[in-house]
Amino acid sequence: MTSLYPLTFTPVLKHYLWGGRNLEQLGRQLPLTGPVAESWEIAGHADGTTVVDNGPFAGQPLTAVQEVLGLDLIGRRNAWAHARGKFPLLVKLLDAHAPLSVQVHPDDDYALAHEDNELGKTEMWVVLHAEPDAHIILGVKAGANATNFREALAVGSLEPFLHVVPVKAGDHVCVPAGALHAIMGGLLIVEIQQNSNATYRVYDWGRVGADGEPRQLHIDKALEVIDFGHAEPAVGQPRWLLESDGVQRWELCRNHYFVTERVIMTPGAVFHGACLGETLEIWGALTGEVDVNGVRLPAVRFTLLPAALGSFHVHAAAPATLLRTYVA
Image (cartoon, rainbow, N blue to C red; front, side, top):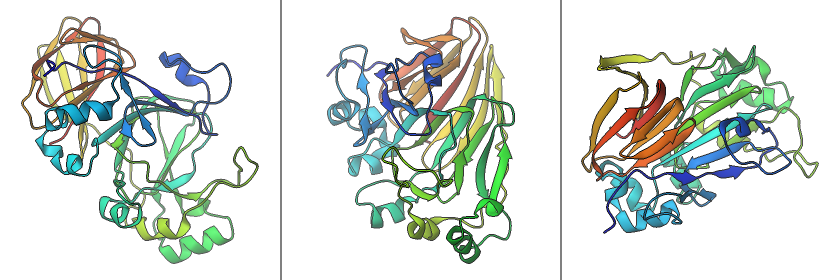
């Protein structure tokens, strides 16, 4: 078997009408014209699979690597996903040049019942850049329920029921399945999520798609999965973990599917870790540059550490801010 090592990937670009050209600022090679909304950085989904661009697995899609390595790639804690033929997570960059639709994602049980073998979608966002007055929609206003929400949709006046939250660079947002949400214009975001594309579009600001027709809405399904108890939530607050030898760690989001930490490292600092078969780890450098077991990771770039990798070392060549994601 090929020796395990940190894997890096060629991103998959997605062209949606709300995208812009700002991913070019993050080093992504964009086509000459047209909006680019998303860069799928680590993905193994039918709608987009990234290809390894380093080491012995170079040229292989992530799905093929999983077929070879199995739980040695994703870890025993993700055996449930492997049994469904799924890579568990998806990491992407989003350029919200214009607002996304107001939408909601189902949980696993609803997705399994209504979307074939698709997973549900719990996700989180980390804001890389925010224009002045940037904001998101997160949850509903207090007092919203399925009845008055549907009535507002029928007359095209949903805004009074949407909870608007200002955001700035560095903020993070935990978005569980069932939470109504929308990323609004003027934001560059890292999204870490379950490996799913199950999205129920509720409200699309009256705009039309490239064909001149309104984009499809999924109101009935959305109303079945919206958590109306998720009313007026706030942006997340990091939970301090520890500081040691120039490495600071905060926990941002923790759920059944993943844990994401923010790790800040001073020049020359080294994070010592080990992947012992339980879980993969995904590391992303947001600023600075690090070396992960000999693999250079500049900003903004991600690497997948196989679950059976063994010991690993993240060495900061410069001041660096990173995201670390694993399954607890």
